[in-house]
Amino acid sequence: MGQIEALIFAYSDIFFSYYLNTESVCTKMVRNHSLVYIYSGEYILEENGVQTAIGAGECIFLRKDNRVKMTKLPKDGEWFKSIFMIFKRNFLKEVFQKLNKQEIPLNVERFESSIVKLPKVPSIESLFLSLTPYFNSSIKPQDDIMKLKQMEGLYSLLKIDKKFYSSLFDFNEPWKIDIMEFMNGNYMYNLSLEEIAHFTGRSLASFKRDFKKISPLSPHKWLMQKRLQVAREKIMIEGKKVSDVYLEVGFKDLSHFSRAYKETFGYSPTQKN
Image 1 (tube, rainbow, N blue to C red):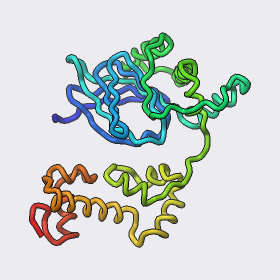
Image 2 (image 1 turned 180 degrees about the vertical axis):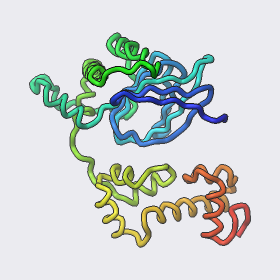
Image 3 (image 1 turned 45 degrees about the horizontal axis):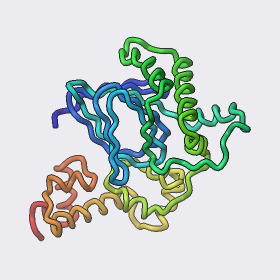
C-alpha cells in the first residue's frame, strides 16, 4: 500500500474528506451519530463480521458507541470523497426540545445493526448535492448554514424510518460495563484512556479508580502486557509471522514491538524460547 494522501476539512460538524489514489483502513469507535454520503470511490464497513459496501451517490447512518472497521477505496479511477455529518448530543437535545412531543412515536424499536444503509430518496440526495461545492476548501460556508443542513439531514432520517427516533433521541447515559471484559475484547485497538472510559460508561476519573480495584497495573501497562502475551501465543503456538502479529495485537511500529517483547520475555520475537 502506498503512502496515504488525505485531505480533511470541517465546517461546524460537517466534514469533507479526500483519500487520494490509495486505500485507507482503520477500526474506530463511532462516538457520535453520523450520516455519511459517498461522493466518489467506495466505503466498506464491517461490524461483527458483517460487511456493508457503500458506493458513489449512496448514504449510510452510523449509530454512536459502536466499533466499526472502515475501508475507504478509490474506484473507477476516482478518489474516495465523502461528506460526514455529525449529530452530537447537545445538538440532538436542542432539536428534541422543539419537537411536538405528541408527534413522537412511542415504543419504537431501534435498528439491530449500528450501520444502516439508507434508501435513495430525494431529500438525502438533494441535501448532499447542495454541500458538494464546499469540497473546494476556498469556499467557506457560514456556520448557521451548516447547522440548517444538519437539521435537514436529521429530519430526513426521521421521515425515512421511525426507528431513527429511538436512536437519535436516546439521552440515557451509557450503563457501566465490565472493564476487563471490554479491555479483553478491545485491547488491539488504538483507544485513548478517555475513549475506554467513555465506552465503559465512566468518567476518566471513575475509570481509573475502578481499574485500581481490579488490577495492580496501570491501564497502559495492562494493555502492553496483554498485547505482548497474546503476541507470544500467536508466534509460539499458532506459528504466525512477527510481521503480521505486531499489527494484530495493536502495535503500530515493529521496532517498538520487538524491543518491548525482548524486554518482557528476554528474547526477541524471532527467537524460540
